[in-house]
View 1 (cartoon, rainbow, N blue to C red):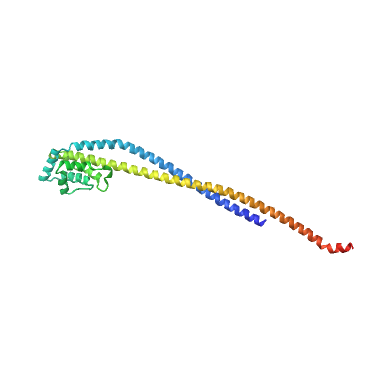
View 2 (tube, rainbow, N blue to C red):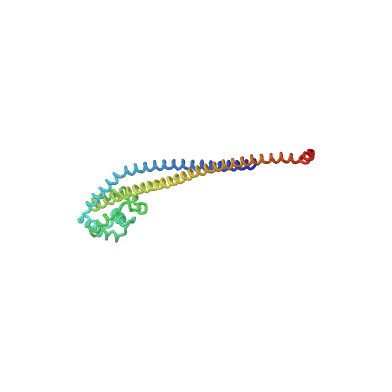
Length: 266
């Protein structure tokens, strides 16, 4: 019986281990499903934000295009002539910031400004080449530029003295707004993509654990059948052994009295 008890003990220990692993895996699946649900909710909120921003962004792009049309060859010649003769902080800031944005920098130098505005065609090529979603708004301080245009230099740039610069101011303001909106939209898209990747990875982990759980079920059933068969075999042989031992004891008892019984009958 000791062997059978030991086998049952081992079986019970293995079963406890299987049940513990199953519980752990099922808790992990539940956790992942909760995290997936939370990620899906975040995606929905971000998509709603993206959809809400999109019409305003399109409107700003239209305003950028309208501002471009106000930049005429004659107007740009006046700007160039003004800068050849005079220097004023508001317009210096405006032109260095505008050309800097076209170059992907915070501020352009004087030589670059002169080169960009010398010819209307080349200036417009530079303007049309800008991709707002590729502008590094933090590195070139786009928001700071916009704040200075609309607060620090706003009144001066809207004065009669700098009237020829007003179309360029309008263009830079709209381009700054477009860059900021494009950055926000791209940031939302990145976060949505990251959440979608997280959901895919989590679902793959769930599928993997689920497959392992099904494997544990099959293995457990096979082991249970084997253990049951093995236990039955042990019981059968123990019963047979007990019967044999009983017969041996009976025969040994008979053999003890064999000589006496044999000679007593002679």
